[in-house]
Image (tube, helix red, strand yellow):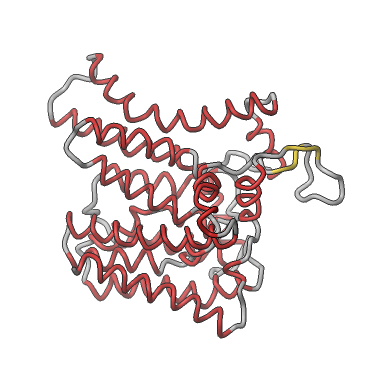
Length: 365
């Protein structure tokens, strides 16, 4: 029963911490449809809407307003479940966030316990629960769903091959790419895993079978995005509507290390952005050598650099939540247990003293 009771206990402590803090501050902000959550709710209730921006009223200013910048799988799941909650979108989104967070804790714990051991599983789950921005899992943002799909994909990927596994991997990959913009980057995991596996089997990369096998894993991640853009083409006559919509947010490609350097030197070291940049960045530095699979830590590093590569660190404190391999790196590390727990505690301190107070005061986007 340990594989259920321990992650469930961590989940209860996690929920109790943030709900207790909110109660002390007499705040229900964690349950409100703020920022992007409002768009996810609108998509689930009325679908995608696109219209010309009203100058001086809608922010940020641009040519296209509406909700075309947000991905559909989270709203679709909520729409399917909403009839069970009396058609309450708020209850549905929050209830699903709690459910997927609990399932994620259970599955991450099981994955780590199976591959590394009980103590490693406990620390990885604690790292997931008490990372600096982890309270976003309990909100109407799609992060709990994304982590659930992420760990589900890993369970399927490392199973012995069969038809059910292949169908599951295909469906979950499409769902991941329809849940969050950087979801498509998870295609790196099967890509690198396939290269390593074929190399061990001494399969030549010049054979058609090699590339057909690779395509089987990569295409579903691309397909999700193509489905969304095709929908925009048929409904709004704009295949690249999402890119045109995002233009007003002024995200431009940049060298991620330069963006991180500017953030660390121009803003307080314990600003929300810098706090998470340092915490996740130190994960890669302090816990070398990595005991997790190569494809996992490489994907985590790419995800770490992807957000600043768009030219800004805005909202990076929640973008980094999906760095699931980072929590695994901490748990599986050969470092002393007290050191790993101290690092997790540092993340919790940052959450309680910096990020969460700003969040419930409506100051984190």
